[in-house]
Length: 229
Image 1 (cartoon, rainbow, N blue to C red):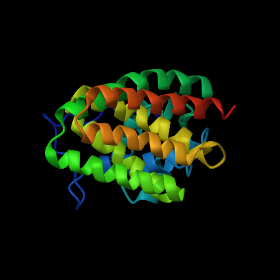
Image 2 (image 1 turned 180 degrees about the vertical axis):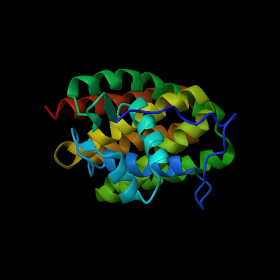
Image 3 (image 1 turned 90 degrees about the horizontal axis):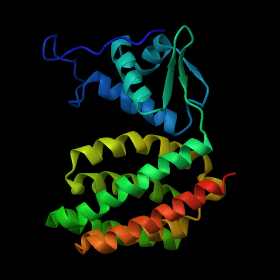
């Protein structure tokens, strides 16, 4: 299966959109990304473009374009004459990824502390309270939900489109690794508390403390990653 060029929307027809406003490619991308991250599509699995289109109820062109995006993020590999494979989970590559994530996430945290508006600061304050409750109750389901909200809010409040692009490429691989190992290796209470500290620093408008808290969180994530060996 070959990968075709995406339609140049400046010269060609406008991309088709679903009822929710996203393009069909967006819809296919989000569904496939979630299936890969949550291991419904397993590492090493060969993907059939036609079968995915049928399963998702979306045409083959949006599915093909979604697979291109996923390939650019390292979640699938496009191999000549072999098709599309879900990428393997590799510990060494994950640790290299975390080197980049540490720098980008610290940048996002410090800039969010500087640039967040009042509504965003209130959101981070509420998020911190909810993370503290998750730590107390050791509620995995709630943490998964709050972690996603945390990541989205962090990037949005940083007001840096280039950091946002970098984080988007990092987060899928990071979430998939976490999802594979969190049941046996995650210290939920500690992880939630570290997220809480970043959120409180952003809410307080303290970029220095936000950077320190972000590094502490990344120290734990590296420790968690190494513990899976």
